[in-house]
Length: 277
Image (cartoon, rainbow, N blue to C red; front, side):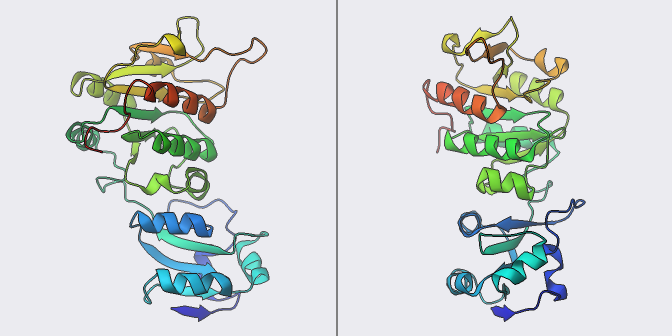
């Protein structure tokens, strides 16, 4: 339902001063028409939309009338957000609950059951990625190469936040991204209970060059940050460390770039996703 509002309307509070840091919340603001339409395909729960009159015409067709469409001119939207905004539309959505199986949970035993039941071939795990853009781009890469699950540990930036969602192009809401705890315990069980072989990405001297890697049928790919990489405790759980050869003047790649290269190489050995997809 289209509702004309002013910039001081109290119903716009969750959109206000969007660039400011916020604490934990059940909701998240999504930016741009393409992203809004993609999340709608994933059956994400929409609470409201804030948009220009031009976008409101499209959204009135796409969304049921009980979801309010708050309409403002561009300069009004800029005033509410606290910065110049050029995409013309935003949406407030309910974030996936960490206790809801299929989105993200801290119960690793339930997650293991899901991975086993889906006969997943490839799992991506991220640790110590503090930049939400890197987290989101990694998730998007994983989706592009058909990865079964993307596990983001608690040392990483929020995988369902505004910046991560924008970088992931919404694929963090497709039901394959999980926020996990107790990473070392989880990796141990993925190997012992689910039959995965664990590959860690690191430029260390003991690493095998990517072109020489023999991929197992079920594999976990570990990615850490560009600066400090993976923790020693996590590296010790790896069955094999792998690296990407590059020019001598360059010692590392951004994690999202290296992930894309490694996932492509891995995909050449067979489908990354589950047998049933």
